Figure 1 (tube, rainbow, N blue to C red):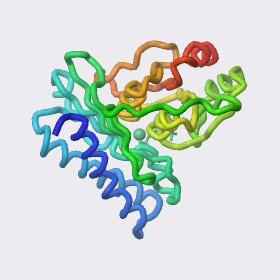
Figure 2 (figure 1 turned 90 degrees about the horizontal axis):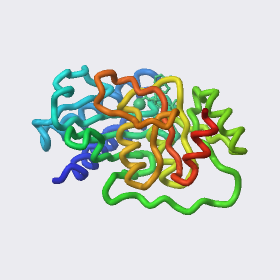
Figure 3 (figure 1 turned 90 degrees about the vertical axis):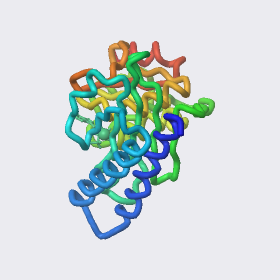
Length: 243
Ligand SMILES: Nc1ncnc2c1ncn2[C@@H]1O[C@H](COP(=O)(O)O)[C@@H](OP(=O)(O)O)[C@H]1O
Ligand SMILES: [Mg+2]
């Protein structure tokens, strides 16, 4: 298996445990905690079986400082959009598996599972972004904590806001043509954006910090609090609108 196949297999393994758990008897916090733990176990098992020598940075595991000197680091969010997963009946939650490599010093592979839709999008084959539909621009934002900067940017762009859960789902909403941009500020960690950003880049989308600077992964500090993902032809306008 190549690295993309490993990432996709890990995302599928997480989906296979998350879907039956969601449809079982657990509710609320217990369901979210069980989902986080089961998806973490499923992904860790795939990585241990196929890439035992690689380091891992996961939301659901203790941060291993070995990743700071490792050549290959998997950046994992086993269940992104836990709130939406717990809510039941929603499809805006995701599984994130990315690979960071020291040579390029950047993400090289990513897979994002959307279990409720039965889909996994990955860096290879690169997804094809559909053409822009007629109508106002659509800016995806957190449904539970839409940042003021996203509201202001949408107003400046004459855009409508599309509130959704999960950083992975919102990034893929741009890849899949459900939104034209995703703007986030106020807090997030490397695992929330790594795999979605890898997939978005493969699809030819713009990805950066809010100030237009590059997103840096496998930095010591896992905090990576803001993010812009958009169609490349909109990048100048979106970045100007958030400034
Ligand atoms: N202000 C903040 N501080 C820390 N994490 C944040 C955050 N805003 C969003 N996130 C994280 O980013 C992911 C997407 O958030 P949202 O759905 O609100 O857009 C969620 O990940 P998890 O579900 O993995 O915890 C959420 O916890
Ligand atoms: Mg997350």
